[in-house]
Image 1 (cartoon, helix red, strand yellow):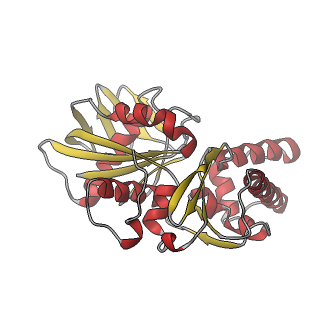
Image 2: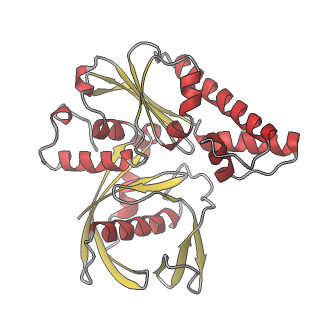
Length: 316
């Protein structure tokens, strides 16, 4: 059973289920709510308070526990639950800047654990991760969701996530590894800027979900000066990000630019208002990276895919 998971710093995304925050509460007794996971004598529930940024997600077991939640959600969504051992093929990804250094370690983080037993929603689960493959973020999402990439001589893909903004330039659908990297310019940086200014200038304490609501235009009960501050900071953040890409000799006004990721969709108005981008496409599917990992896993293992995926693609 193939399960693809995008381990974001802000959210965990899969192919068939809604994203959930990359946050956990651990306890010695079952927590409140139905989505309680028991593993090795501890009980875990999800929380909207995300884990502080981890450049290396293998530093502790928290992202592995989040993976168990994601596996259980996917198994239930696909109707594949069994009370016997379930064999899993796992497809995951990393930002381009971390891929070369961390891919092997990230694979080993999941592999070699043997049969994994846990309980979720009161049901016993036994899974065995028999194979893990790791792929580069942003490129994975683009090849899985955007047609005719091979017909474009030059495409820039920009994935704005929680802590990083990943980019890769494609030439006729093939990654140009000289223009593939990550900037530490994800939306978490924007949240920190907004919260600091709102507290200092307006004596207002904002959380990340409130900032998201304002950026989505859902701010009927928010003071106008708070909305103005958030909108101004967001536009400055986007302008700085796009200028940073331009400083890396990445052309934004000629050729095709594809924006994806939760951050890009959240900041779509600001990107369009910047005047710095020419032919732009937004991939609205927040699960695009997870779908891309699944696509590339199948390609790697010889399955026939859509014609635009038949180019030679570097996979790990």
